[in-house]
Length: 104
Image 1 (cartoon, helix red, strand yellow):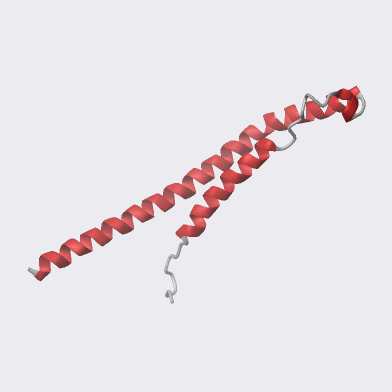
Image 2 (cartoon, one colour):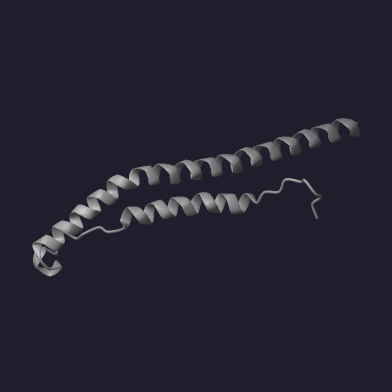
């Protein structure tokens, strides 16, 4: 059990968060794709298809900032995981070196 003031961090959780954010971005990329082969008749009036197409164009433009934010947070989360994992391994190696040098 950790004492008061101890920093705890779930590397698995943070790594999952990075993957989850990237998954959200991919799913948002797939949202609202219109199959142009369907044609106007199957979608209703030309005005309805044009309005949907206009909305999707605006959605794509407005999402650039959201995509950038998702990717930035995902990169930061993964960088924390990578750095803590590296630091942990460096400390483990230093301790093993110290212990093997002290045993001689």
